[in-house]
Image 1 (cartoon, rainbow, N blue to C red):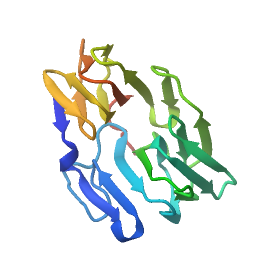
Image 2 (image 1 turned 120 degrees about the vertical axis):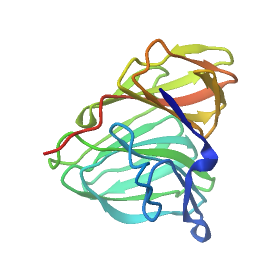
Image 3 (image 1 turned 90 degrees about the horizontal axis):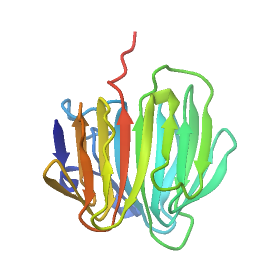
Length: 223
Protein backbone atom coordinates (compact mmCIF):
# COMPACT_ATOMS: atom_id res chain seq x y z
CA UNK A 1 0.00 0.00 0.00
CA UNK A 2 1.25 3.49 -0.88
CA UNK A 3 -0.11 6.53 0.89
CA UNK A 4 0.99 9.89 -0.55
CA UNK A 5 1.13 12.97 1.66
CA UNK A 6 1.53 16.29 -0.14
CA UNK A 7 3.79 19.08 1.01
CA UNK A 8 0.86 21.48 1.34
CA UNK A 9 -0.75 19.09 3.86
CA UNK A 10 2.07 19.58 6.36
CA UNK A 11 1.38 21.37 9.63
CA UNK A 12 2.87 24.86 9.68
CA UNK A 13 4.91 25.83 12.72
CA UNK A 14 8.03 27.69 13.70
CA UNK A 15 8.31 31.38 14.47
CA UNK A 16 7.97 33.54 11.35
CA UNK A 17 8.80 36.72 13.28
CA UNK A 18 11.98 35.01 14.49
CA UNK A 19 13.01 33.86 11.01
CA UNK A 20 11.94 30.23 11.50
CA UNK A 21 9.60 28.39 9.14
CA UNK A 22 8.73 24.77 9.99
CA UNK A 23 6.63 22.24 8.10
CA UNK A 24 5.71 19.07 10.02
CA UNK A 25 4.74 15.77 8.39
CA UNK A 26 3.47 14.25 11.66
CA UNK A 27 1.67 15.50 14.75
CA UNK A 28 4.01 17.97 16.40
CA UNK A 29 3.56 20.31 19.35
CA UNK A 30 0.15 21.99 19.15
CA UNK A 31 -0.65 20.15 15.89
CA UNK A 32 -2.16 16.97 17.31
CA UNK A 33 -3.70 14.45 14.94
CA UNK A 34 -4.32 11.04 16.54
CA UNK A 35 -4.34 9.45 13.08
CA UNK A 36 -0.93 10.86 12.16
CA UNK A 37 1.39 10.18 15.08
CA UNK A 38 4.07 8.07 13.40
CA UNK A 39 4.99 5.68 10.61
CA UNK A 40 7.15 2.77 11.66
CA UNK A 41 9.90 4.19 13.87
CA UNK A 42 9.54 7.63 12.28
CA UNK A 43 7.79 10.15 14.54
CA UNK A 44 8.82 13.43 12.88
CA UNK A 45 9.95 14.65 9.48
CA UNK A 46 10.31 18.41 9.68
CA UNK A 47 11.33 20.77 6.90
CA UNK A 48 13.07 23.72 8.53
CA UNK A 49 14.05 27.05 7.03
CA UNK A 50 16.10 29.47 9.14
CA UNK A 51 16.96 33.01 8.16
CA UNK A 52 20.48 34.26 8.80
CA UNK A 53 21.01 34.51 12.57
CA UNK A 54 17.85 32.56 13.44
CA UNK A 55 17.78 29.32 15.36
CA UNK A 56 16.52 27.14 18.16
CA UNK A 57 17.88 28.04 21.59
CA UNK A 58 19.06 25.32 23.94
CA UNK A 59 16.36 22.70 24.49
CA UNK A 60 16.24 19.11 25.76
CA UNK A 61 15.66 15.76 24.08
CA UNK A 62 15.56 12.21 25.37
CA UNK A 63 14.90 8.77 23.92
CA UNK A 64 14.89 10.03 20.35
CA UNK A 65 17.17 9.40 17.37
CA UNK A 66 17.52 12.74 15.55
CA UNK A 67 18.84 12.65 11.97
CA UNK A 68 19.43 15.92 10.13
CA UNK A 69 20.02 16.40 6.39
CA UNK A 70 21.19 19.87 5.34
CA UNK A 71 19.83 20.89 1.95
CA UNK A 72 21.42 24.34 1.66
CA UNK A 73 23.31 26.65 3.96
CA UNK A 74 25.13 25.79 7.18
CA UNK A 75 23.72 24.53 10.48
CA UNK A 76 25.65 25.20 13.68
CA UNK A 77 25.11 22.46 16.27
CA UNK A 78 26.19 22.53 19.92
CA UNK A 79 25.14 20.05 22.61
CA UNK A 80 25.60 19.38 26.30
CA UNK A 81 27.83 16.37 25.56
CA UNK A 82 30.50 18.74 24.23
CA UNK A 83 29.97 18.45 20.47
CA UNK A 84 30.11 21.63 18.40
CA UNK A 85 30.01 21.31 14.62
CA UNK A 86 28.98 23.05 11.42
CA UNK A 87 26.82 20.82 9.22
CA UNK A 88 26.80 21.72 5.53
CA UNK A 89 24.84 20.76 2.44
CA UNK A 90 25.28 17.05 1.76
CA UNK A 91 26.26 16.28 5.35
CA UNK A 92 24.28 13.90 7.54
CA UNK A 93 24.11 14.43 11.30
CA UNK A 94 22.79 12.03 13.94
CA UNK A 95 22.17 12.85 17.59
CA UNK A 96 21.10 9.93 19.79
CA UNK A 97 19.56 11.72 22.76
CA UNK A 98 19.21 8.45 24.75
CA UNK A 99 18.87 9.20 28.49
CA UNK A 100 18.94 12.96 27.87
CA UNK A 101 20.86 15.72 26.11
CA UNK A 102 20.43 19.42 25.42
CA UNK A 103 21.40 21.16 22.19
CA UNK A 104 21.33 24.40 20.21
CA UNK A 105 20.65 24.63 16.46
CA UNK A 106 21.33 27.90 14.68
CA UNK A 107 22.02 29.51 11.34
CA UNK A 108 25.18 31.41 12.24
CA UNK A 109 25.96 32.16 8.59
CA UNK A 110 24.83 34.96 6.33
CA UNK A 111 22.78 32.87 3.88
CA UNK A 112 19.41 31.14 4.36
CA UNK A 113 19.51 27.64 5.84
CA UNK A 114 17.25 24.77 4.85
CA UNK A 115 17.33 21.32 6.37
CA UNK A 116 15.21 18.22 6.90
CA UNK A 117 15.16 16.83 10.43
CA UNK A 118 13.79 13.37 11.14
CA UNK A 119 13.08 11.86 14.56
CA UNK A 120 12.89 8.13 15.19
CA UNK A 121 11.74 6.23 18.26
CA UNK A 122 14.39 3.89 19.71
CA UNK A 123 13.78 0.22 20.42
CA UNK A 124 14.93 0.70 24.02
CA UNK A 125 14.98 3.72 26.30
CA UNK A 126 17.87 5.23 28.25
CA UNK A 127 21.58 4.85 27.73
CA UNK A 128 24.31 7.34 26.89
CA UNK A 129 23.87 10.06 24.23
CA UNK A 130 25.89 9.66 21.04
CA UNK A 131 26.73 11.96 18.14
CA UNK A 132 27.96 11.38 14.59
CA UNK A 133 28.39 13.42 11.44
CA UNK A 134 29.01 12.00 7.96
CA UNK A 135 30.54 14.53 5.58
CA UNK A 136 29.31 14.36 2.00
CA UNK A 137 27.55 11.00 2.25
CA UNK A 138 27.78 9.09 -1.01
CA UNK A 139 24.70 8.51 -3.13
CA UNK A 140 23.04 5.19 -2.42
CA UNK A 141 25.13 4.44 0.67
CA UNK A 142 22.74 3.22 3.39
CA UNK A 143 23.13 4.87 6.78
CA UNK A 144 22.16 2.71 9.76
CA UNK A 145 20.42 3.97 12.87
CA UNK A 146 20.74 0.80 14.99
CA UNK A 147 18.87 2.07 18.03
CA UNK A 148 15.77 2.56 15.87
CA UNK A 149 16.32 -0.49 13.65
CA UNK A 150 16.25 1.71 10.54
CA UNK A 151 18.32 2.42 7.43
CA UNK A 152 18.39 5.72 5.54
CA UNK A 153 19.10 5.71 1.81
CA UNK A 154 20.08 9.07 0.27
CA UNK A 155 19.37 9.00 -3.46
CA UNK A 156 20.37 11.65 -5.99
CA UNK A 157 18.90 10.70 -9.34
CA UNK A 158 19.31 12.07 -12.85
CA UNK A 159 16.23 12.61 -15.01
CA UNK A 160 14.82 9.21 -15.98
CA UNK A 161 16.99 7.22 -13.57
CA UNK A 162 15.33 4.42 -11.63
CA UNK A 163 16.06 2.91 -8.23
CA UNK A 164 14.53 0.00 -6.34
CA UNK A 165 12.45 0.67 -3.26
CA UNK A 166 13.56 -1.59 -0.38
CA UNK A 167 11.20 -4.53 0.20
CA UNK A 168 10.66 -3.70 3.88
CA UNK A 169 7.64 -3.65 6.16
CA UNK A 170 7.74 0.15 6.19
CA UNK A 171 9.40 2.54 3.72
CA UNK A 172 9.12 6.30 3.93
CA UNK A 173 10.20 8.40 0.94
CA UNK A 174 10.64 12.17 1.28
CA UNK A 175 11.33 14.20 -1.87
CA UNK A 176 13.89 16.92 -1.17
CA UNK A 177 14.27 18.27 -4.71
CA UNK A 178 12.90 17.56 -8.15
CA UNK A 179 10.07 15.12 -8.91
CA UNK A 180 9.69 11.35 -8.83
CA UNK A 181 7.16 8.73 -9.89
CA UNK A 182 6.19 5.80 -7.69
CA UNK A 183 3.23 3.45 -7.96
CA UNK A 184 1.74 5.52 -10.77
CA UNK A 185 1.81 8.74 -8.73
CA UNK A 186 3.92 11.87 -9.13
CA UNK A 187 5.64 13.34 -6.09
CA UNK A 188 7.36 16.71 -6.04
CA UNK A 189 9.60 18.49 -3.54
CA UNK A 190 8.03 18.37 -0.08
CA UNK A 191 5.81 15.37 -0.89
CA UNK A 192 6.23 12.00 0.83
CA UNK A 193 5.14 8.40 0.29
CA UNK A 194 4.39 5.98 3.13
CA UNK A 195 4.76 2.43 1.83
CA UNK A 196 3.58 -0.63 3.74
CA UNK A 197 4.69 -4.13 2.74
CA UNK A 198 5.77 -2.98 -0.71
CA UNK A 199 7.49 -5.44 -3.05
CA UNK A 200 9.12 -4.96 -6.44
CA UNK A 201 8.52 -1.22 -6.40
CA UNK A 202 10.65 1.25 -8.32
CA UNK A 203 11.15 4.95 -7.94
CA UNK A 204 11.69 6.90 -11.19
CA UNK A 205 13.13 10.40 -11.38
CA UNK A 206 10.86 12.63 -13.48
CA UNK A 207 13.50 15.35 -13.22
CA UNK A 208 16.89 15.56 -11.49
CA UNK A 209 15.91 14.66 -7.93
CA UNK A 210 17.10 14.09 -4.40
CA UNK A 211 15.21 11.77 -2.03
CA UNK A 212 15.53 10.51 1.52
CA UNK A 213 14.26 6.95 1.82
CA UNK A 214 13.83 5.22 5.19
CA UNK A 215 13.79 1.43 5.38
CA UNK A 216 12.11 0.27 8.60
CA UNK A 217 10.44 -2.66 10.31
CA UNK A 218 7.15 -2.55 12.20
CA UNK A 219 6.41 0.08 14.79
CA UNK A 220 8.32 -0.52 18.05
CA UNK A 221 6.41 -2.29 20.81
CA UNK A 222 7.27 -1.43 24.40
CA UNK A 223 6.54 -3.11 27.70
